Length: 582
Image (cartoon, rainbow, N blue to C red; front, side, top):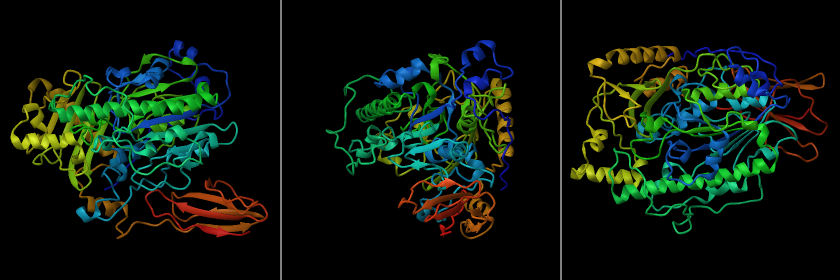
């Protein structure tokens, strides 16, 4: 298999100019937009990502008033809603690989969930995704541009992040630890809405409250989970809500949906704690705030599937100075677009390996995205092969294993009481025709859905004569995409691993960096193409730093100090740390 990254628009613009000033002269922008965006500040914007897990559009700003979300409601009033945002997979690790790199997971060996687990069941070795040597995590590119980059604290990218990826990645990571006046890119991940939050016994993990204590390095959390009695209750137990037609209306299902909405309400409270810190620091009006989920919802027939219920997640972006406050932007957005958009917003050049396109900023092309794409392969120890393409109304799905049923017996998912309820009712013949669809023993080779008229994707139009032109158009678009990114569906995972490892029997290793002193400075290099070089200076005034700097130019090491260096290409085993006492 050959991985063939596509090229997108590359545009260079003045590095130190804030988004709003630079966008004012972008060709093709409406005059009213450019006037509204003008900002004479010379500061680059901070970027704050508030990322929750397993999150469909189940919040009031997107039409579902069940959960109590005052902080998200405020973000929506003061920001822009994006209802057409889609992950590349219905599960977190492949989707986070796309967010981190701007690459489709199927193009870099990242689409099997997870690449480093279930080795006993699959008989496969643990491995990592291996992008091309030119690929860097977007946070590393932002660090190279002068940004302080923090992650609090989930990673899960299908590869080990190089030490150069973040200034901080921990439960204590926070913009407050940056140098004075330094712009930041900070990610806060909210675990409480995760699928596991539906398991019984119900109760929040103590560590999920870390957002209230962000930046406080003296705080320690209790281990384990709260009891249900300890867990905050934001909603009455008898609250009314709509149950998707593919789930039965039983007490078990209603209880799980109550948990889901209660978890969302708690997430909103935790998110509010981070926003309060931003306001306390006087940073609100120089920060672009993103809120979104890492894919669609947590319930059965949502997570892991590439129906909209598994891919679609709500996004809200709040811009400084009330730009477009209270509006809705209906452009199609894929997770591969996030990395180029970050670079576009922060005034940096877009590498030509990126497979997405910017949806904001000076690098946004005149033509908005017309299609989004999704893929499903292995989940834990069970495998399927499905690809999908969607325009603003229709979705085409191609099943590469039509003789295999849709439902996969993922043991982790079967901890959800609703999943147990579905299996019980299936065995007893208690599911109606819609609820039983997921458990069919086979599936059609092709599916086509009108996602506007049939939002739950229950009525396959692929066999209807009046839709053959639409099906043909989307099928051709899928073929073009597969060729463009070098995705060969149904490639055995063993063969995929061999391709990633260049035919070797074990994971490739990053060569040990060469660290040498010349003319009073230390120079560093590595023979492995694409390796990132990180370094630390130890022993100066007794200081031993935790963060790793990115090597760019020769370094003068202060008297009494030593330099530690590590090289790491994404997907390779990192080198050992080389130490030099000049």
